[in-house]
Length: 303
Image (tube, rainbow, N blue to C red; front, side, top):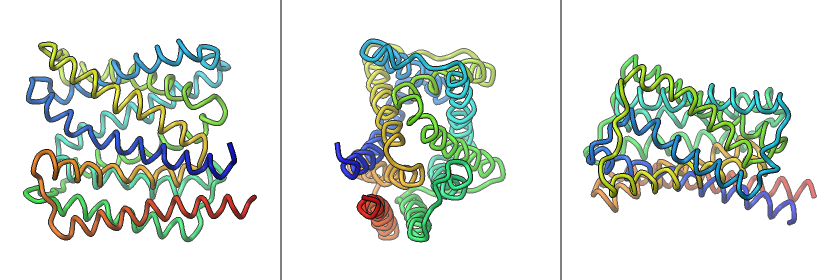
């Protein structure tokens, strides 16, 4: 595969992962109605999705799972610190200030990646990229606050946990960009998810009490689909994208998630968007498309 084609594939994979993550709200709301609380779902989803992911990778690419001891420590510890912290902070932020504010704060992550990737990964953002990050962040915020009958609220606890979630998400992106080219995208996805599950398995029951399991085959089938979509498939796409293109562009591409989520909410649960929300969606589309075009132009210049 030509290098430019690989860049486009990586960008498409990042957008694809964002679209899969965007379905989380639809799955989660239905599982909540079936009696599975958010705290239990925060652990059950990565356990089931991560287990399927590990089984698939071991079954089809078992040799790829053999990494040096240092690599294993980096992947497991990195997943525990970044993905584990992200999952906990995300749930705590939602509990404190609700979904809209949490999503708005979460997508500070592209800015964090842009600021830190130069020092940590030697991937220095261009001025054009920084402008696209700003356009995308403004678009995310407008699309969140532009939802009808949804109010974004702020408080000290919510702000704290939202920023921690964004930092964890950014760290997860940087981890994937560092580890993917070294040890493989599938291997990175598996071991980092294992690290996150180890943290969540200890912390979630401690904070919330015993897990509440789904009741009935419909609830289990929905949880399985949720896990396959947003953990197994999305993680593979996300880390393979990070093995192909730089962390900054992946983080901008995944900002498509709240846009797709807003559109799904409009179509499936009748949560409309005010004009300012549609303006936000337009800005995110411009930012994401611009990041993809900039990536292709840089590769063409390099060739």
